[in-house]
Length: 300
Ligand SMILES: [Zn+2]
Image (tube, rainbow, N blue to C red; front, side):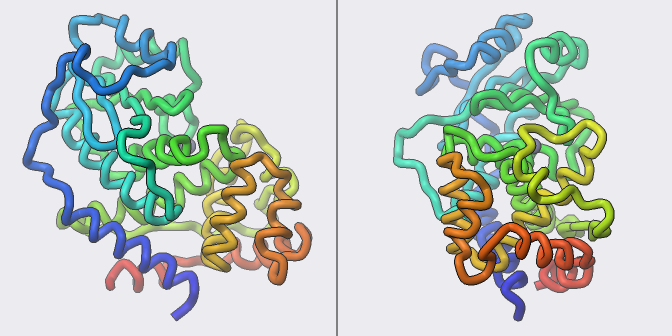
């Protein structure tokens, strides 16, 4: 059994454990705004709630506070949010103390209101959601059931922000969001009777962004958005599967804003003694197609 497979199996085991703890049949309870346990200090939250203020209802779960229009739209969001929280907390081996800060999630339904709100925030090119200072703003159409990892991806960002509130580099944030949400979403769907497999495409060597550039970008490059997300996911997957404890210490160092190569050589002293060595091994890894392995793992 490869290290990669062990890591992936671990994710799916965690996902299965989390499924047992959620109950989708209970609708999210509505709570008066004044009774919410915490306030959102993000000015974007105030702007969101000022758009047709009388429509907003509120609710909360262990780690999130929701602002929504209809509870039947917010309930599945709350189930998926807590599900992903447990997956990422286990993967990153982190846990917030009881009573710690909760992330706020604003769920728009009306397309015109969402368009109006977009003027105030920067849309993530991958998901169309807006993530700002630990709060998430999304639009959900009640008629359309999400079948991919878009919401999971954004939830991973929220949880990473809770654990690393000073921020992590863009490639790491996006790579983690794709890596964890793909595995978790496939597991979540399988638990509900859907046939789903995590999917990761091979990236030909000539398409790769050099790691020295990828690891210093502060946002996805407009002309290479898809490559940026795919490559970032592959890099996270590669580093995590090579040595999980080393990956967690790399994450901590990057969360303290150390330069990538310095943090890398400290975290993986025997394996990657410099950036060029990582680049060489990663190029081989990125070009592999993992379809077969993922299928085997997903069938466990
Ligand atoms: Zn993202």
